[in-house]
Image (tube, rainbow over all chains, first blue to last red; front, top):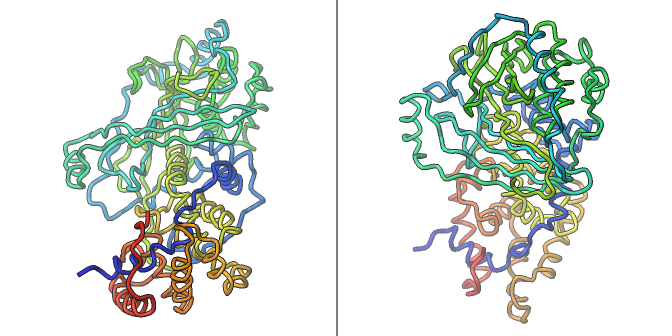
Length: 357
Length: 179
């Protein structure tokens, strides 16, 4: 005997007035732009306080921030709540969330970050522009963050990094393509948990979308002079802008576009001016590349954390960004310290078309 | 918000943005059809835009089963819009006239009209439940999540609605199955 649902589908299915309806591609793109323009970053009101769904467009929010969130994926506004929102993770899980192992730094604290960065800046400033030509700004990154979602399900039992390619242009739509990587297991416990969840062979999940928003920064506006560069980046310096926001901004810049050597030098000089920046030493990053790391400790994001930037000592390019919980995990069920996110900056350059390099 | 959908594991930063875009890509058409069936073609796109705006605001709280959650948001948005209420009486008839899912021969038109009238004769909650399972393709659990009631209650209501609609509409039409 057929189920009630099957019977109702047979009765009414043929009369569905919208069965053949498909969204117009242009409207889809415009709607996505509208959504991001309405709110620069998610609002992390605790779900327990969510009693009504407002149908509002929040017109007072800044579109620039929305654009930044869309392109960079790690806006200051989001970063400010990034750690706090992690406390909404499923606390019913019995095991700690799987997190990547920390990197091994050598020579920590043996010199000043200021001195190390200026040395790299001088080297970068002498290099020719190697960003290429083309109307599209292309970047390829590989990243992971605590709270990843794959196939609509949160992933706590394994580390599943995501490869992201972005193409943006001032005068035409861009593109963002993401592919999930193979799961990584930091421990046998995590592998067992993954298998218990029934996820042994995770197929790569591909998302490919059009972006109708231009880059946040025009490359021509970015100049080597530290003061003018600071203005162009929109970082006003303390007290108006927090020191931690400069590190976020630099990572956003590299996430969005290739940075020519002269501007890399300017970025490094700007960064070298932060008083509390610490020299972390040399390191081999998660892609096997040698680099020089600096860090800043702050509670930017809600909980005490260390934000590390890793630069190529020869070219001044940003190679990686890592965030580590330091003093307390708050409501997170994590040991301290634990890595909570990382990004590897793998490739960048101008491109004549929104296709892989 | 209606429904007991639990808070979701959160995501952050670039991954959160990428995940939202993927979800938008995956479910845009589904949410559009949901809205189209309830407010008609003229206002469906507005409902979709508002629904995903709310979803983006709540990106840190999206549940594992996202589609019923999106339907819940869209349902609340529609319910909150007075002008949608003002149009409601004429909507089902208008939808019946504009539907182009099968050849427009007289018998099909008559059956469609009968189906729309049968739906219109249901209470708002029953009508929503029937549409959720017959047109949105949700199972009892998903429909319960949207309606904010138990799965058991949904099963009881579905059984009653099946009998009522079978009586009103007779044997089902043998046409191409829904998507």
